Structures are given as structure tokens and as C-alpha cells.
Amino acid sequence: MTLLELKDVSVHYGRIRAINKMSFAVNEGEIVSLIGANGAGKTTTMKTISGLLTPSHGSISFAGQDITKMKAHIRVVQGISQAPEGRGIFPGMTVLENLDMGTFGRRDKTGVPADLERVFDLFPRLKERQKQYGGTMSGGEQQMLAIGRALMSNPKLLLLDEPSMGLAPQFIRQIFKIITEINKQGTTILLVEQNANQALARADRAFVLETGEITHSGTGKELLVNPAIKEAYLGVG
Image (cartoon, rainbow, N blue to C red; front, top):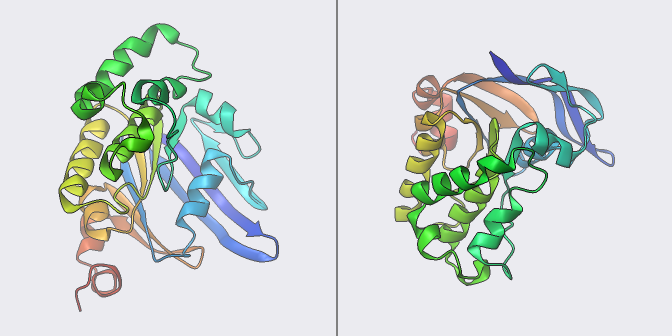
């Protein structure tokens, strides 16, 4: 079943076209990765899906409903949640308070305790430090908190924008292992990531963005062995 679909979506910043007639779909239960160089349009795509930007052309549907002009906070209620680039946690709030912010607008409040335990099972460090202020945590811990907060809205689709950015190698491995586990538990994931090796290795399907357009698509395994992708994004000539 198609969960998310973009059809001919274009986005402009003033006169600058950041995305040009982009079309792709994410099926329920998948991990789909978007890779590309800086400025390719990856984060713009995520912001458009989450409702922070409005397309100048095209349409977006989610679970069979047109959400092209839907407000961002309503999209969260409908089942789209994002852990943004740069994490975006609240540094002056505790871990528990940050996680509680993820339940804003949630209709099924009775499910919150179970989802909190799910987050603590995925990220035991958050449980250990639930009274610690977010701003005093390491980069890897803050990324865990950002993903955990997004999960607290009980999303159907989790948007992850550069989850490995600025992290030490041991945290990168841990974060991607947890992303796979989140997907196995039933959450569909759209992943934007500059670590192309990890992004493609985890993806059911993937798309390559260049200057706001999709230039390659296929399964993660297919793109991992594509000579052009290997040379441009995987450091293999």
C-alpha cells in the first residue's frame, strides 16, 4: 500500500527553484532513503512533506488523503513526524519534558505510557538520563532524544533528516541499528542521509537527488553496486 506520494512537486525559494517536478512514493513498511550532495534538495523535500514549506506546483498525498496545503501540526496528528536536521531538541528541558513535547496534539493519550516505554527500550540511555537537561547531552544522545521525541507522536511515517550528522562512529552504528529496529516494529521511514553507505544498506528503495531532481532510483542494493553512485557518493572509483 502506498503511504506517501509526491507528484510533480516543485518548491521555490523566491526565484530559486529548489525542487523541480519531483515524483516518488513510499510504501507502507518500507525504509526509503534519499541521498545527494549538499544543496541537492534533500532537506527541502523533507520540510515540504512535513508541511514547513508549501509546493509551488504538484501534490502530496498521505494515506490516500491530499495533504498538499495541510498545516504542519495537522500532518503530525495524521501520522507524519520528523526528527529534523540538527536535532532541534529543547536544551532547557529535561529528556522527559522533551519526550512529552512529542505527544502534543496526540489524540490517543492512553497510549502514551506504552510509547514512552518503547522509546526507553530503544534508547536505554534516555531512560537513565530522563531528568537531565537536553542541552547538556552529547550529540549522539541528543540525536537519540530527537528520534525518541518524534516517536512519541506514534507516527505512521517517520522522517529522519541526517541522523548521523556530526556523530562519532560508534554512535552512527548504534543509530542505524535502532532505525532498522524501529522499522521492524512497524514504522515506515523516509531517511535523508549523507552517509550513503549506511543509507543504501538499510533501504528497501532509494532515490538520488541532484539539483532538486531525482536522477537515479532503485533498491538500496542496486544503487550500492551502481558504478556512477559508487564513484559519486561511496568513494569508490
